[in-house]
Image (cartoon, rainbow, N blue to C red):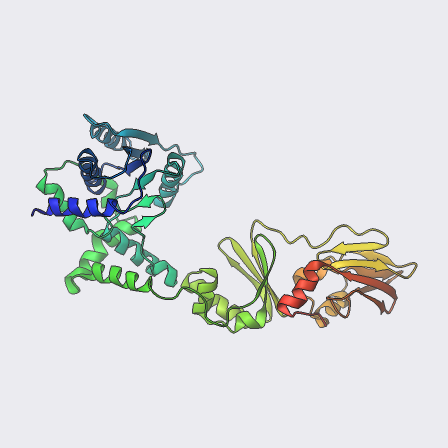
Length: 417
């Protein structure tokens, strides 16, 4: 049996696992390179031979990135030629770039993904020509950048509507099979440029490693598959979390400080460098730590994890007798008192009072400042979880806890003072 026939049988078996429907379209993403042209050729044959059971139609989608001038346009014309004498549907796209955009490989990938997502109906699928060498390169790139365990997980051959039929096939096998049938394809000249990290790994680094350790890429993929079978959840000491709103959560610092770097990685899906840095950070009593898309704020015994597009709205504007915030409502019981919101830059004695009472910095504006002439004191209640009247050195106040404050005490067992 020829290698091409064997590969064709492999793809037929792969496609037999896909729940195609009579109105489903299987789109093949074709760049013009050897991998995608071979995938389209075999898929077209299988569809013509009615071996893609249940499938309604086949389609070809091509994205012209517009970055290599005439060469890119030549790729598109070549791919259009693949549709001669074919009943396959077609969808051709050309990327547009603004002057402020940097057309990196990652930017191209995101634009392609957006096109693919808009193309697919819920009953459709798209086949991508990633192969086992692509997988090994991706894993190695992530390792170089300090990934955690999740970054070593393999691509999935079947992931929702995305299919990767060639994922178990290496580049050498694809070349052999293409040569057997005299397949024509296009070569992307940018693949020879080692200024791109993936190309440097593919063209320089992997061949060098293979001379000393043959089969290196296969061993890397085998390791990735083995890692995918490991438990993915944090162990028994997963910290309690209190969600205030979408994008904002609170944790006890001592519970986060007890986690290992690996457990932090598993909890928040961070890379290795960030996981180890956060492990050290949680040993400190206060500070801020910026992550891609998030900020961690450690203050007193509490930690806030905030998505950067979310703000913690601590307080409504106070009036003459009432102050309402995320922590509750304060009502003045003594005449001549005034209520103010805490602002940074006020007297050091006010800040010291908050620090002494262990009030996290991100909650200080949620507690009113009581004023009587020249005197100012923070209105910190003795207990956050219960309604109470309490007396300060300048007057009396009633405190009514919010639902959030009661949850903070109950779920995280956190209290001021």
